Image (cartoon, rainbow, N blue to C red; front, top):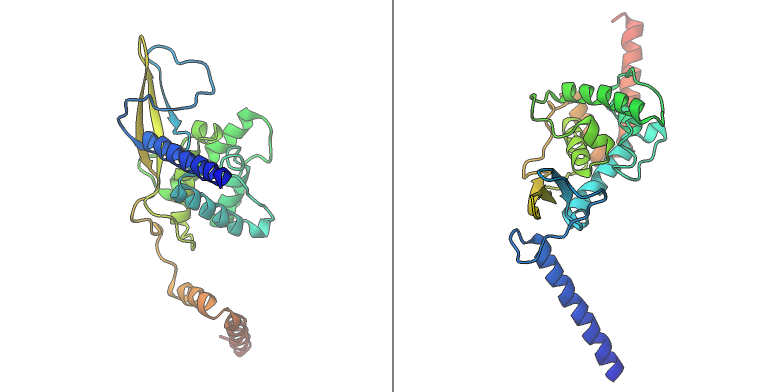
Length: 251
């Protein structure tokens, strides 16, 4: 019994410690310094940088949105036999993004094939992102991604890009609403490093499709596929048969 009591006491203590850490992480103003990770050398005086809050990607809404986008990409690329497992690692070089754009638009894009050269990857991304911005018709100065941010595996920029594409091309999977990612703004002063925690919105309360609705005919078939997929082949056979009869009759 004493052993069990110690075990439960230890668990309770761990839970309390985790709750305290969580409270500190989400507090915008705290007596304790905000925790952050810097992979590179210290900043120069006056230099600024924005980094992810350490547990930002572990938030349930963020994880749900990322999983949905993965499913959407893999569903879209199923015919091309491409499987995406990581949104940053598989998107940053432009290879998957190029395949996805060609699949979604039905166009053949004039881009280079697979390359290990960072310079060539960035050139490819430049072409692809120019195409994306043209398709989405985004006003100049409001684009939330760039060649540098995507190639450097910035997950926030990557999510902005993929959410915009999913909305435009009418992703059938429901995108998680009101997703925000915690980030930290760092500024190196003369004697200290200032840090400010903030949240960046990835999706709001209105995340419906931005592209025009499909034609009525497509809507009908989409509904039939959703509600009675077993009847879809029969309807297609009837339509095909009617088409052949019209052709033979001289229509």
